[in-house]
Length: 331
Length: 276
Image (tube, rainbow over all chains, first blue to last red; front, top):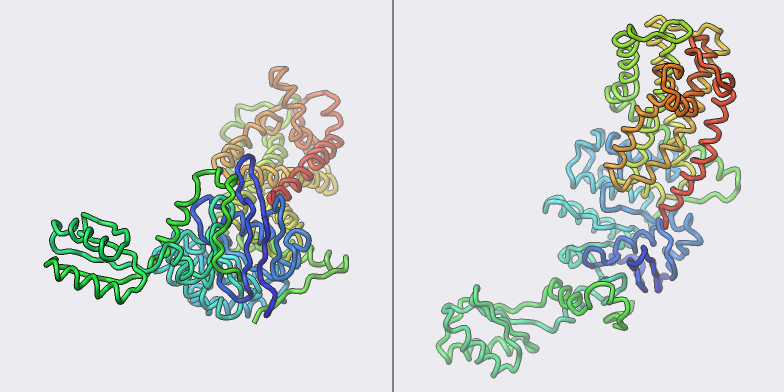
């Protein structure tokens, strides 16, 4: 087993009175897609900037690919790629000119830089647009060019700061496919996002960050189970049946039932899914209550996220409280 | 399969890296010329030429140069210097756009020489300004201006103008790195280019100004370069006797060196502050 690709311990970074990072820690194993999930202002970008050698932390320690980000930044820079929130490419130059320029700055010989640029244009579906100025690219194309630029030397660790923010669904899918392909080639990816779906689809492991510290870490499934287990959702035909049905299930299953009057829906947390399902169907039939729909489902990452963030005291007070991270899985 | 670029350790190979990296950044700017020659011509070349024609012919008829001489001969060195002033805005605009769009961060996250981003920028701007001077000089020759004191003095004058431009590069980089998070400030800074010119002697002789304004204009670093260029080209200098005008060439060297001494460290400081 290789050393972890990213290790950081107790990182702190203050801007005036605001703690952007407040004891941030993370361990990402080699080859994983690691998601950093959190609301706006949680410290995701600050964390990436520290790891990509762009920002000096006030205190704490961070290593990327085995090198310290503050004392060996050149070694780190030779092993990372970075794609930020806006496509950091030259608008006037063509896509190919951009890639050749960045390749030259990685000190590839001119012929190698040109060959690599063409390879990447092909790999990222930009071969036809290669000689057009970037100004004429769509949002998705720009992001893919940005990804291609961060992948010129196929880095050990790739940092992607909200790579799909502001893209339409099609652009987002294109970028997701590119990220999967990069991860499949063995690069460790650290991805920040505020889209839960994105973390769910791409990440092997996720850290949830709020007020500059990690409040939970684990695989998407592990995080989902933090909100409780599976649920069964029932939609009734008659709105008048809602209250009696809720009371019935509450007594029989001994669980909290939540109601939604607008959709005539009930939702019950369950432990043994199949047994509970049979039980619910039978009880409703016995009481002559007609269900239009019954579905078993796992909690979504959204629910887990809201649950975790909801537990956080608002504002900067989070930093003073002594809540320990709900460490589900220590990699 | 991941690849890791080798970081050179020996000082001379690191220096070699710094030079090639800076050259890549400079070439990026030259590629902009090739990509959109229209915009470059309009922004850096056409504008000064238009002002020469406007001041030379529209307003020039009403202008008399104190101490005698042709107004267009008086104007040309002023316009050369104004082109150097407009360069502040050009440097500022590129530096702040790169910083705001994350291009600077991408450079900083790459295993390239740290100095290359600024050095490459400075070299590109100097090349741009040299080209602008050449075009403007051609335009001057067309309207009847020409150097009177020979090639060596003319080259000396252009050298002083470019020295001033080199000082302005660092002011532009400093302002760009300071104001990049807010584009309104960048635009506001650019609107000060003309007042800098009017509070000096590029367009009118200092002796025609009220005393207090003349004092400001006299101590404007731009005025020394303009006076020095007028002397070296053998153009009318607008009859103004003062120590600073009598030592114009000396001051045209001293002022830019002073500005460089202030703004070079300031812009390096700003560049390093990006990581705090």
